[in-house]
Amino acid sequence: MRAPETTFSYPYPHPAVTADVVVFTIRDGRLSILLIRRANPPYQGDWALPGGFLDIDEDLDACAARELAEETGISGVYLEQLYTFGATHRDPRERVISVTYYALVPQDALATPRAASDAAEVGWHAFDDLTSLAFDHTEIAEMAHRRLVAKLDYSTIAFQFMPEAFTLSELQCVYEALRNQPLDKRNFRKRILSLDLIEETGRKRRNGKHRPAREYRVRHPKRVEIIK
Amino acid sequence: MRAPETTFSYPYPHPAVTADVVVFTIRDGRLSILLIRRANPPYQGDWALPGGFLDIDEDLDACAARELAEETGISGVYLEQLYTFGATHRDPRERVISVTYYALVPQDALATPRAASDAAEVGWHAFDDLTSLAFDHTEIAEMAHRRLVAKLDYSTIAFQFMPEAFTLSELQCVYEALRNQPLDKRNFRKRILSLDLIEETGRKRRNGKHRPAREYRVRHPKRVEIIK
DNA sequence: CTTGTTTGGTGTCTTAAGAACACTATGGCG
DNA sequence: CGCCATAGTGTTCTTAAGACACCAAACAAG
Image 1 (cartoon, helix red, strand yellow):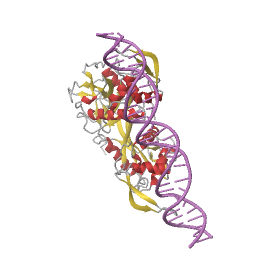
Image 2 (tube, helix red, strand yellow):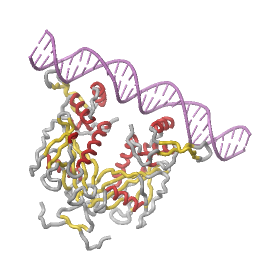
Image 3 (cartoon, chains in turn orange, brown, cyan, red):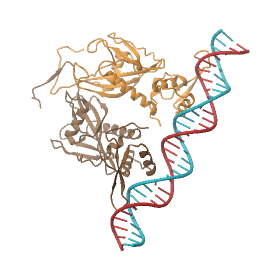
Image 4 (cartoon, protein in one colour):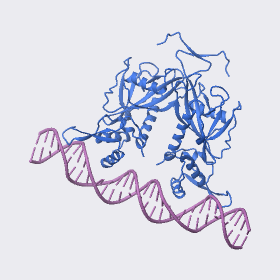
């Protein structure tokens, strides 16, 4: 932290710049996002997206990744720039330009959110149950959702929600949660397998008193490709 | 303009924010973009995208539209936010975050670019012939191009290049210039007409010593819809 | 006024992709 | 050993996309 008497001066007014992140996962078959309850004004007590101010010598992507790690303990996940919001009075304190990102966290993820150092409340919320968020964060979350759903159809982005090993039924659940509609099992498996993006691990998953399912893994887990 | 002794101070460093615009049109069947030759350092004499600093009480979209109008005389065209570039040393003077946009200008457009008040050189350049631009503007232009080509397939964005009245052959030329490949005339017309987005004006266009072409207009010229 | 040249305008068949649809297989449990 | 729950598998039909060739209208030239 800087000494309080230090200031930074410019010949023209400059806005502040933040990176804010919409963190998605699938929990119990429902699309959910990670929110932080604000400890201070403005919007004290409201839920908000994780994020924070850009360091002056830090790239935008790095800022988003750092804020995500600091505030939620999540790192190493898929992170993509979404859109930049800068309406003049979106933050009552000063002019703030928010460069927003969205992140996708694998289902299982040990990624149980750890509270930030300042012990703010952090938690997953089903996307469909969102009440209104701080600032313009509701609008941001909705745009992230539209982008995510759109990308389902022409990229391999859904695999970013999967753990290292998974079954085809689990993968289908993810697609169904995102599209909010049931899919035909045979058509789904046919299409996914024809893409040749996943392979069998050779193991089986026993998940109850019924036939066990084959386990699969993604061939290139970090890659998000455009398909079709 | 402000008095030079005025300064603006903040307890933390703030970056500058600009809006820069990739302006596309189709000229002589070739995709072209509008560039400005820089009159001052850095990159003096190089070609750059139109754009400039955000006013502190101005929305981002308004800034892009204003800079476009001021520097090129173009207004009232399709304008969409593209991506935000903020690498730490992309501008040698100070930390600058560039919120980029792309604009589409109708073919005919009286939109002959008028030079800005400071009489900088402004001109159209075929996209395929671009040499390297100032700052990271080459990268920005390439991303805008990728976005534009992608949107061709799932939106009605191409109509933004068309004048009020046009022929199907002209429309096909636009698609061919953007996709950089010839299209089958019959299949093209079948698909376009089946979308029910254009209608005949009733007039014909005489364009030489051959059969005249029917004129069409877009039903909702300002609307860009997602199709399929 | 006939002919040639140039671009405008049209339909059918083939092929590929997506949608609909129902039964057998395997393991756990009682 | 029989029941229950989820895993796994092919075919048919429908729809969209791609390939492909000729006649029409205006003008110019002779």
